[in-house]
Length: 189
Image 1: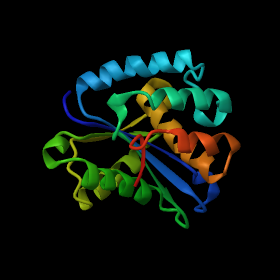
Image 2: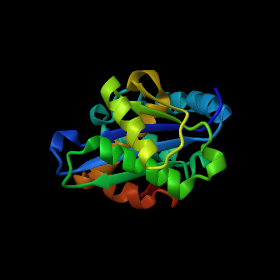
Image 3: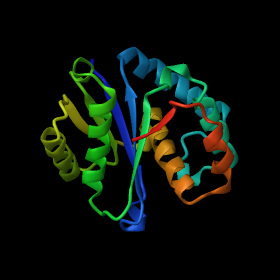
Image 4: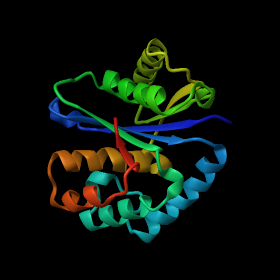
């Protein structure tokens, strides 16, 4: 299956609209998808983050994981997040983040065959996202759901969404780490 892969996760539904974050990870080739999966698995192992969800990961492991991710030149300009306040339209926010990456950071030729993979997506949400993406002018090949435990790419999207939540909550580990990360790695939309 060829195309660009768009891995998506979110954080903040539990705040009932106070804060919501959507992360989007763009993978531009099959080779990057496959080689990157192996690379991410190795990083999860060496940083001791493992396949644990971000919210259950100790802050020292979070720091090691993000610092290591930020050294990968292959991921520069591929990791995005967007934050929202005052909304419970989580599907709308998810579509907005994907559409903004699509419109601002990808060319039309790059998006032929866009495959959107969203963590924890049920059938109804899949249909809603597909319909709204089409309305937003996003050309895609497929929209599907995935589970954290099955994809290192989805776990990376989980980490970015979780990190933006931790920044919002002003968790101590985020203060110096956020400013230490190289420009162009975690791009706020």
